[in-house]
Length: 111
Image 1 (cartoon, one colour):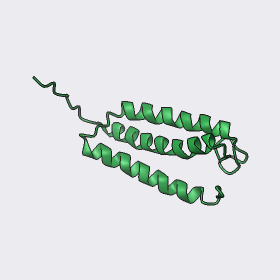
Image 2 (cartoon, one colour):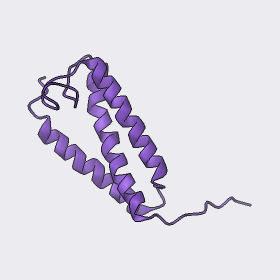
Image 3 (cartoon, rainbow, N blue to C red):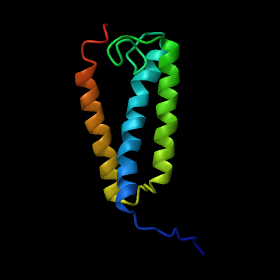
Image 4 (cartoon, rainbow, N blue to C red):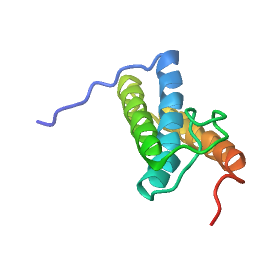
């Protein structure tokens, strides 16, 4: 006999948690990657905040913090691949934050 997973209905605040989980998970990526690459990158701890550059070490820590917060929010949000609306909310958060970050950091990184 197959075990059936009981699907619980998601409340409005689960969708809010899903959105912010996507935002935190996406925000973790540039900070973590710049940090492990040894490149400075803006963080809220730089001077001026968000405009100056923080050390790679600070970026690794900030990226990991964002990853943990995103994971916790995703866990409590009851998001499931079976719930198409929750997947849409997660994708929209990833898209929105990615676009916002691409516009914010366009002049911060030199190749």
